[in-house]
Figure (cartoon, rainbow, N blue to C red):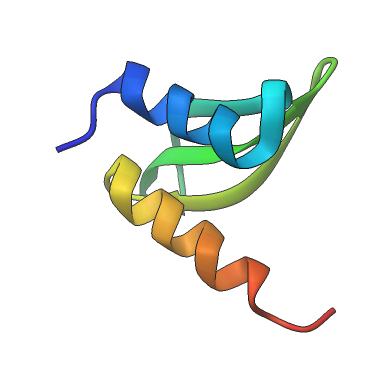
Amino acid sequence: MMTDTEALEQAMRRWGEDGYVRRQNIDGERFTVGVREGVLYWVKGAGKSWEEAFKAADSQEKKPA
């Protein structure tokens, strides 16, 4: 099980120094991963664990625009 620190490190590896993680409750999804730009936070994936959130981000990145 990934810790908060490990999740942040993973986000920064994936998306650079703007990579960010947050625990929150949006539609029952407690963990979110994404990119922070100033005060804005762009969620790339959400889930019930850090691993699930990163998996969701991976599936979003494979979808065509």
